Image: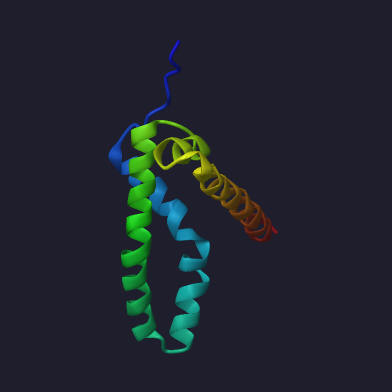
Length: 112
């Protein structure tokens, strides 16, 4: 019996969730402050170009692999690329847990 999976309710909700996941708090809090303090406007332009050149294709690949396989991160990489690539999906899951640990500390600072 095939298991049905949850779907996003709207494209806007998915885009906002993906952007929020990819951007991170450091890009919103610390990075603008440091670049403004050090007069790094030119660096910001190069940074944004690098994000577009590297981050956008990777995000698009992840979305396409996920939509095609309809599996978890590890299962999707195994199905789309090959069995030896399951560790790449595992690294993605591990990175999510590490980031969650960092955000827990930031939330604690905010509450205190």
